[in-house]
Image 1 (cartoon, rainbow, N blue to C red):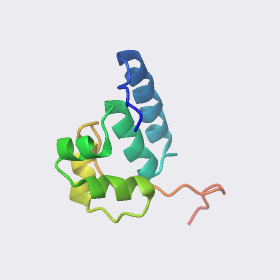
Image 2 (cartoon, rainbow, N blue to C red):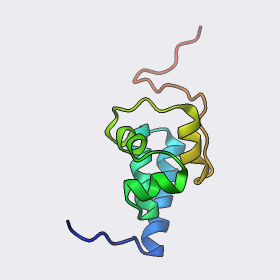
Image 3 (cartoon, rainbow, N blue to C red):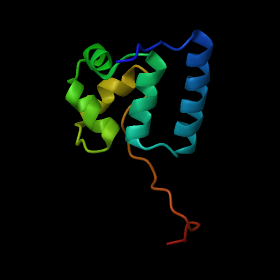
Image 4 (cartoon, rainbow, N blue to C red):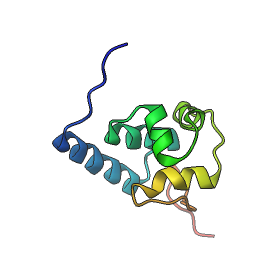
Length: 99
């Protein structure tokens, strides 16, 4: 198994900027966001799960897009990044139609 290298401070800052820009635009899926958050920290799935007090399986399933995490699990992970689960508008390809 290859050794993992933690991102440098500059790399972490670049990853954070990209992450928050994409979150702000609303073009990140939960699996993408989970993986990005973990990569910013430079932790393995197991380390990240222990740090956020969830199981490794929760992190693994979310990153694969096969999980069905609870809101509490998602908030536990997101809190570290100043985020929380909430209602967001679903993006559509067509412009909004007046109702």
